[in-house]
Amino acid sequence: MPDLAHVKAALRAQRIETPSWGYANSGTRFKVFPQAGVPRSPEEKIADAATVHRFTGAAPSVALHIPWDRVEDYGALARYARDLGVAIGAINTNVFQDNDYRLGSVTNPDPVIRRKATDHLLEAISIMDLTGSRDLKLWFSDGINYPGQDDIRDRQDRLAAALRQTYDRLGEDQRILLEYKLFEPAFYVTDLPDWGTSYAHCVELGERATVCIDTGHHAPGTNIEFIVAFLLRQNKLGAFDFNSRFYADDDLMVGAADPFQLFRIMNEIVRADALDPAYGINFMLDQCHNIEAKIPAIIRSVMNVQEATAKALLVDRDALREAQQEGKVLEANAVLMDAYNTDVRPLLAELRAEDGLDPDPIAAYHRSGYQQQIEAERAEGQQAGWGA
Ligand code: AOS
Ligand code: ZN
Ligand code: ZN
Image (tube, rainbow, N blue to C red; front, side, top):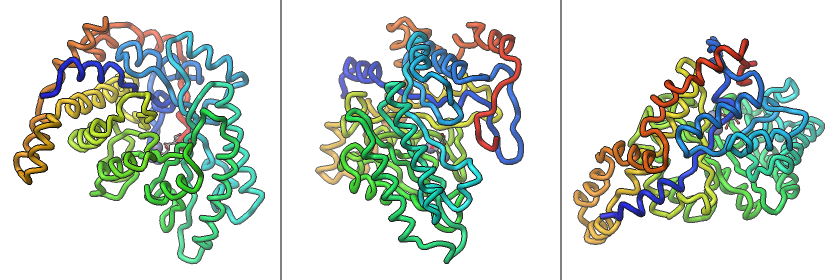
């Protein structure tokens, strides 16, 4: 059986990054239901992220999105975050919300528009220099809707050229997280549709380019833990955008739709000894809380990742390997299922209590008065940026 002290140490070291846009108002293309107390500024989003960290002890950084989190002085913003006990994490770029990008951003047939898009990516690196961020997260909405609309291969060349310029601008301690997505907003071809395309571009770029797996960005039935295992073996897994999906890119709370899938993913992470922050994987959330209370939903999400991780850490690796090597199919499967079916909530509650945290972070948040305070203080919350 795994050593409990080791399990606890691994859980204590675990870090989950929350997204600034998850704290703001969001919705579908049909309606945004505003909520009371949502942040009006990047500072207030950071304050909410710091609150999630205060109650979970496991979320010490917050990802920003440019331009949604644009400020005059990024150095001051980073200091503000640090004073609240969190760091600014990945910088997300936006080359999808400008009229110029109707036919694409870095893959647009017009070189002037490609230049504008690439300049935005370079600007994001300048912001990282000021915030001390390590990760530049790139997601492109680029693609085409109709066969023949543009040349698929030329678009790959244009994408490669923009990525090359961006990669060459990175500082020594900075890296690219290259995200892929099967479809939406493009419906016929997406220029970065899957992990293989992202992986190939990352290999071409160099060792500071790694793949970001958004768990909601695959065709139904895709075996995500296989992708995780493969990329880990190649040293090319840089980050996750965790969320849940029932249909497409639903951006629901991680661990809500399929906690077993989350366990299988974390099992591959533990198998590769890749959980510790020193390994370099950024475990981010990329979620929108359209109808549920935002801060409690993000606390819940952090807890869901912790629970899946605890179960993965409880897998009896020796017994598993033995059963696998002896070809004992059912026994091997049972080892995994035993761990998955363990109720790890008491273990995590104990761990929090040992660390001076409330064993029940959501209840503690509700008791804290923070929600009442922000509802009183923040007159009119900001929309996350989606559909704005
Ligand atoms: C879009 O579908 C992607 O998931 C992006 O990762 C992300 O939601 C966006 O970059 C937010 O900044
Ligand atoms: Zn994402
Ligand atoms: Zn997405």
